[in-house]
Image 1 (tube, rainbow, N blue to C red):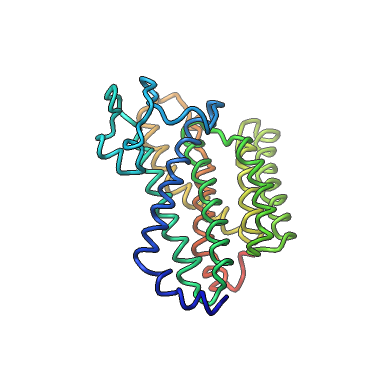
Image 2: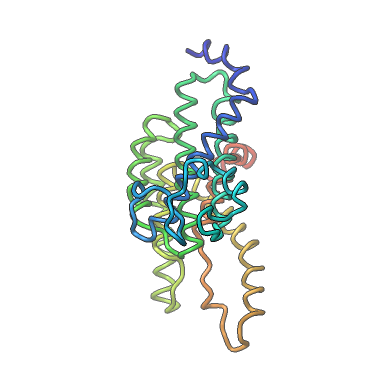
Length: 285
């Protein structure tokens, strides 16, 4: 099987294969958009089909092409001309980029790995990033990380992890427990000692999901990278918010979702974690 995978290496790394991975990602990105829009509202992600949020008109098949349809329609509904959110093409483009990047790292760049194994790893990692993408945009829009996504995902990725062997089941189990407890301790400290809200428990469940998917060794780097990126991005936002607020209003009341930054930390680990661990002599885990 390894020999047959090596023989397919030129095709697996070809522009056609990478383009197919991008199309695969964009198609799933369209479904991710459905989840982002409907899960917080408690709606089915299966029925009804895609509709305009303003007039309720069904979106035709020709108007439902990932990325392309948004620009062909100039970002507006064909029936009522109501604007569509730019989130739709953004999510689809991100999912397409994930598809290309993961195909390259999991399949094209690993010609010596048996093809079924590399494709399984691609599928596992893409599904993981897809869940993180959905949760991140929901958190940005609602400041919530729905249990209906995080809790089943923890169970699914724990079981699926047996098929890709990225980390032992013990490492994944410890990762889930450590991820949740880390955030829980911080949240309890804020609540009981500082008498105010800190991190939400939804962030703990998200970090548990990251730990169960990547193993406990990923958590220090994920938290560190997420914290640094969160500071670099959120501080300018808070300063801009301060200019718009009255002088007597405190920035302590401004809520900044941490879920997207944890997801960015997981993204850093997924694509650069092994290199960073090697360079630091395993100091992160």
